[in-house]
Length: 143
Image (tube, rainbow, N blue to C red; front, side, top):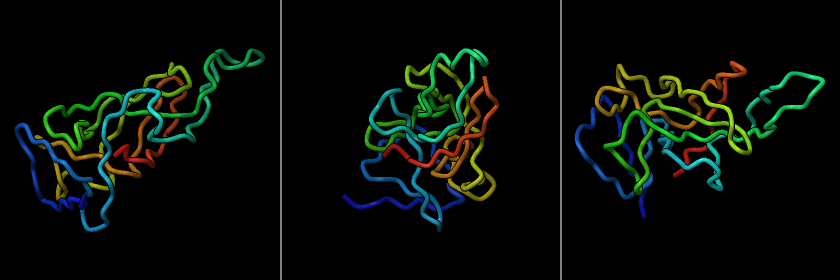
């Protein structure tokens, strides 16, 4: 199976099912794809701890894994997983803590690859976990 390299400006629209690993731009960052929480491969495993409840009681969910569980895009897939164009994340071992994927900085929508005018998120983009306000680098694509 070969890699599929997409370079912008390119706007994907409609239903599209891609079968290969999707790489974006000249730097060939892998596109992020949705994964179920607790899948074996989190998008990040080094998120800052959400310290709720506060000390002296320990956190109710000390997990540091973060998964992109819901993308704003549901029409373009890579190997049957929706490609991420912003969306929701969950952090924790259970997982317990919600957050949001931020607009892509490694694939800007002005000259990058988009789906319905939203930039595709790639490895190295970030998310915010709401309870802590912590920024998390999404270092694994999930593909």
